[in-house]
Image (cartoon, rainbow, N blue to C red; front, top):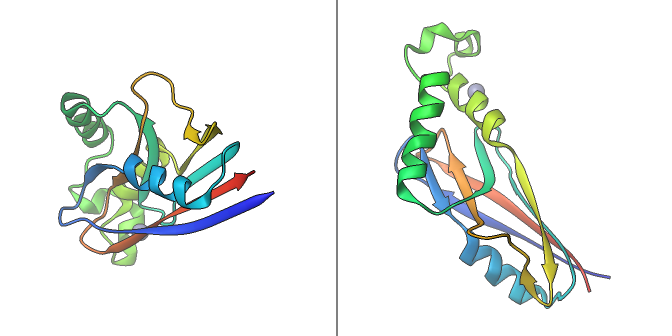
Amino acid sequence: MKSHREELWFEVKTRRAFINITPQIEAALKKSGIKEGLCLVNAMHISASVFINDDERGLHHDFEVFLERLVPHAPIDQYRHNDTGEDNADAHIKRQLMGREVVVAITQGKLDFGPWEQIFYGEFDGKRRKRVLVKIIGE
Ligand code: ZN
């Protein structure tokens, strides 16, 4: 069995963003030389997500509105986590809702997606360097 590990770095200029990272995952898969196996992609921070969905602007707007309605960033004093001096309680909860990781099957050297599936990095507390782990195993 072969394995390949790499980290992708992001520094989002805004507090929140959704970034399509499918091209980077395809590049990692190519580098790995693995044709049959599994690919794990996870956020390495507790205020960011990795998830799979459609690369469609309207939908990303809808995610943003949905998350902000459910877990608004402000006022920050509504969250006990922010009593610690942080202001990112909403980001921890948004990450929980959008998920930590995805696992994609690798078949014949390709990510074995369903229709329209793409992999996204979801940032909920940006403006600093953060990482995503890619681990690919198989043969
Ligand atoms: Zn925090």
